Image (tube, rainbow, N blue to C red; front, top):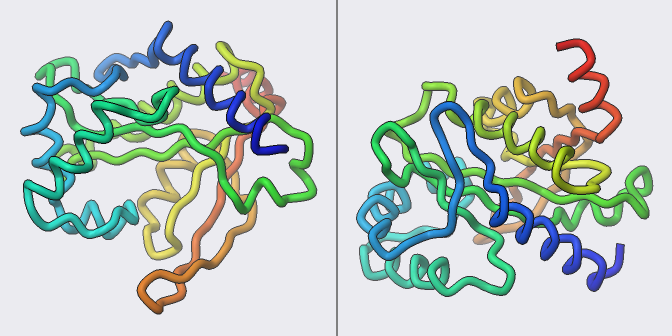
Length: 205
């Protein structure tokens, strides 16, 4: 898919998500707000969250503020959304739309319309099933509200918990890739759910 078509796809998905945000029993997505900064700072500075999510090291509130300001004044269209725990009306993570460079070169998906999802969650809310709940809802939302052919997610091979979450949501393994960071080679796994697989799964539910 060309860069222009990919940008168009992202713009359409972002606009649809703003018109009709993903919402679950416990969570909802929305754009970031200024009052979210304390909660954003609370999770973005967590070192284990940074390691497993692959975020660049952020060590100080000032660095967190710089990143947060970019979320308040996002690229057009916005591609990162706030994850809010409805019960507490609190920001607990982020959900991003994007595109996998690895899959864009994958012959099996050539000329297919697809986007990548990535999720970050405050460590204090791990092991509650929130990631699986949100990912399942986001997949349902995607195939109901857009004309995507597939959705992709990824994980570092050392992050087995992330793979389990993605498998529970219905995605299946689809190869992987290796990249370099700070002189180290890091292996990743890719997961995919196609529209046909999603529809077949709904029929079994």
